[in-house]
Image 1 (cartoon, rainbow, N blue to C red):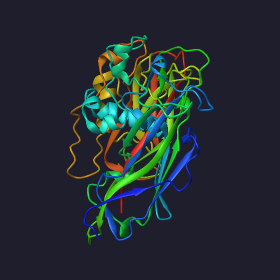
Image 2 (image 1 turned 90 degrees about the vertical axis):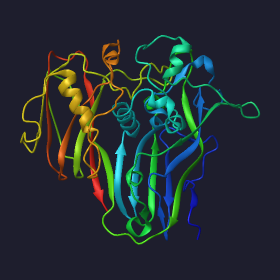
Image 3 (image 1 turned 90 degrees about the horizontal axis):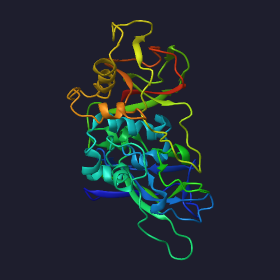
Length: 400
């Protein structure tokens, strides 16, 4: 057996004529019996096509001025990812595209998303937060403008974007090889996101459009080598979208119990009503919108106790946003640096018409067991004029 194997896995189902579309499920089975998967090498590859109609007959061109969320790219086209080791579910991440968007925004500089090969392969750019709105193509280009790059033979053509995503899933977070003896066969199941919730917006304002996407030539690739005997536990980072409540009033209490042990909680917001329709992609569903009314104080408790944050957070950036940034560096591995060294949140984003680049969170040093009751008590400075959807994620670890 070769010491360095480049492995390919195709979906378990036959690809439809025009490719997989919104709300389809794509399942991959990795059977690496006798092998170990190299760390962080599992990639989801394919070609995305963009269309103006639901029959996949009319291509998208530059006049549509379509853009993806700059921090999520093509990750936004994935609604849910479920990972199974043998017969056991290891991780199920709902709202996967939003997870990728807020994580990249909170852990990397804006320019990182247009200067690294990895981000470019995922269709990401940098968010030009000094300019939001308008139809100027030259400026919006930096925010993820999509161009048609090829035309199929015949009458049916589409704009095509090849991509390669290093999926942010538990098997890809190991720092050591993953042997078959620890995982068994690995099933990775992806559900594709709705056309209006994938972070795609249009600045073209064209009438009679029904934007959508399809994905063709889907595959997983990973690097493997003959399995070696290993000792000790392997640590994997896990995350779940545990709760999506809505803030309706000036004072709101949010409670939920994560289904797995967790080391941090993060959350982002989206105003109710900021939803696109198939023919009118005005809003970015993945946007990390700020609370316009501002948070007057934020309390956090575990099982009714305030051992983690012993006082309410009141300052918008130096307390609330800073603790949100800290939460993105959970103490999963003993040698990890938990300091905040880079992020893409700026005062300019918060000051724009569509205020964005905001979230709440808490770092739980030492971790908390599954089933513990998490409580966020939020008091706004005034009653909200629009309701806010809250997307809460729990970040934890799994030992195998």
